[in-house]
Amino acid sequence: MSSNHHHMHNHSESNTSATRLFITMALNFLITLFEIIGGILSGSLSLISDALHNFSDGIAILISYIAIKLGARPVTEQYTFGLKRAEIFAAVINSGTLIAICLYLFKEAYNRLTTPEPISGGMMIIVASIGLLANVIGAALLRKGSQKNINIRSAYLHLISDVASSVAVIIGGIFIYFYSIYWIDPLLTVLISIWVLKESFEILKDATNVLMMGTPKNASMVNIQKELEAVKGVKNIHHVHIWRLNEQTIHFEAHIEVDEMSVSETTKLGIIIEEKLNKKYQINHVTLQFECDKCDPKTLISS
Image (cartoon, rainbow, N blue to C red):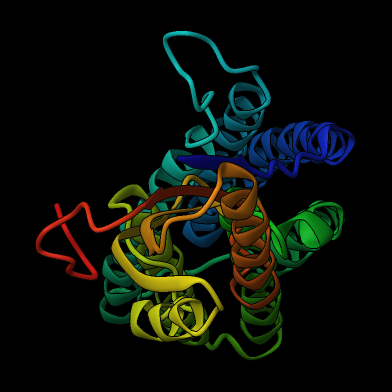
């Protein structure tokens, strides 16, 4: 039996992401208060809707912030993998919330198209512009972290949707202020919501794959079998499992059938296999069970 584990943690990066999330969360709650006041004064339903959107983003970012803190906790006897999957749960909650908001916005857009109401375009433009600035700052703070972390990416998508929503409110305000064209606001809302729905489903699909312990997209079981069985000394590879603990940690375990050899020889063979898996498939946590004509049947996949 050879058990080989590679861990890649970056605590300073997690702390930076958590700090940026906290700042962004505070900005969102501040925007929410400002837009509710502006919406009441201007009579703009779109501003109040945007305020609710920002409030939901603040909650989403709070969830992401808590998830990062939980994920950074050390392993324990009760949780031997730690709480790293908290961030995946956060991504599911956040993307699911976005989908619900989009469906709500579709309904509101339909209501505004059928029964348009007079709105103060000038107030809309001023308040939405301030909201846009704050959302752009928040999105800029999370942009880097979103490229490596599905949890941060779900929060980042919330902010990008808010940036687009603020732009839509500003454009709508301009058309309302100068031309009294009220239908432009719900039209832009629908177009933005369609894009947000598409991105949300992608995040939800990826996060669900992690929670269901699905094989990563870039890891073909058949190709891995062929490559490892081509390694000198390996007769057969079977009972293979590949799954992601979170976005950064991919686990691999397998039974490796070999001819009779010493423990030191299997250790060298294990290092070769680890390097192959890490280089091509970014698998960084490998557990191998070396054996000699033990299992029957020797199927690639086994429960």
